[in-house]
Length: 256
Image 1 (cartoon, helix red, strand yellow):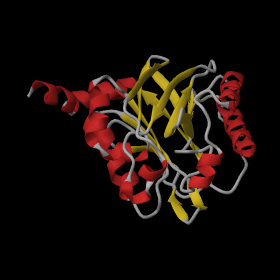
Image 2 (cartoon, rainbow, N blue to C red):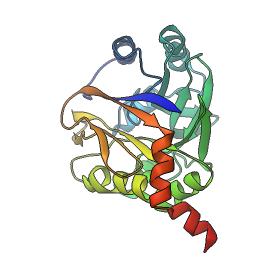
Image 3 (cartoon, helix red, strand yellow):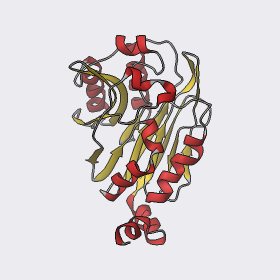
């Protein structure tokens, strides 16, 4: 089974919400052969500014979600986008997956909030892992820091995940997350990993870029490097089967 996915490495800047959604439409229009487009963590609000995050927080089925759902239907492409989710009196760092029919398949809430960036002072902690099936492919969703916990990704892989989607907002100060950890998560579980980051500088954060799509052998299939761009790759489940035969980590951990 094959699926074509893309990552939009967005150059972050002070920009209106409508402008960001318009850019998403342009990305979808130019990449209409993709089954899925992934954008970075907190794409709708931007990362690192509590005032902006609170100003642009929305409910799970808010106005932006409805607009993006319409784009998904118009271009027959799924989108995973990050946004600040307001739920009752709580605020979550969330990522929503809308399929090509405009249906919300998942709303993942970040469970690991790094103290170093004070996310724990802004957001409430999510409590569940997210695993969905889209066009026959089993997809796990994590947000940024969650990818850096091998046990979280291993649990998803043991439940059948074949592709891990990781929207992130990683700065230049932590390049190991992109260059080593993301590749290790793919290699040690025999899964594809799509790591979607910002490029540019905003709120005194200089974002790393280096979004990438990684194969189940831990090697890059596509790398956005240091510019605003869209990268694409084919997810092929036969490659997962081949890699897991040679490196049966999941089988061996279950049989120990």
